[in-house]
Length: 322
Image (cartoon, rainbow, N blue to C red; front, side, top):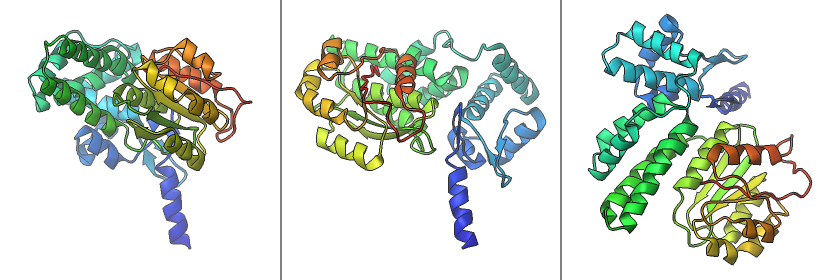
């Protein structure tokens, strides 16, 4: 009985969340950053680079901010700084706010060159530097999504091949899914995310889910081309507070408008992407949120009830997830 209770408690500990995302054990930080557990502990002890939260049972749990410091540390070490200098720089940048929202000069161009050259290792190195330099929201809104839109536009103009476009989207999707690991853990509100039937462009929705997760939500991600009845079943069985649907084509929303309106009786409905319009939102008795990831996530959070699992009246919302 005691052993079973301990296992349950450990699972609860691993699903804690703070303002910087889910809290995880140091082994998970090591996996995400590529730095050994031994070295992470050394950096924590010598430089206070990692600042874990201690549980009642004595477990040390780490946030996304700890992982971001480690990634920035690796980047500075690679530039030739000593460990002490690198750690001091990381902490000074954080205190000054210079590591917050400004994407490094030239990094989008670097990302573009790597993707179009099919350079997987180089592109991952560029993404490592990007994620270690700015907060997640800035990396997504100011670098990754604009770059993918640019590649899509150039493909439409015949300047980029199908192979290059597919390589870029596949690599980025894989990286985002790695960031999304464990995003349904915790005790916050749960949102079900899905593309409407026929919609295969899901990276914007995935990015919205990552930002929403940073605001304490749990994410149940269904992905591309999801039938309304499948989405409704997922919302019902997971007792989700919100359902976020995405499409780049307004006609796809029109085709399922009645089903989404009905789903609004069970959860807050949020629609986003280029296909989400004010006219469509009104047809679903919904509120259209701003297309910016952070703003949309904040508006959806504001519409959520205080207690997870309860709905605030019968209001329905629609989210522009980009």
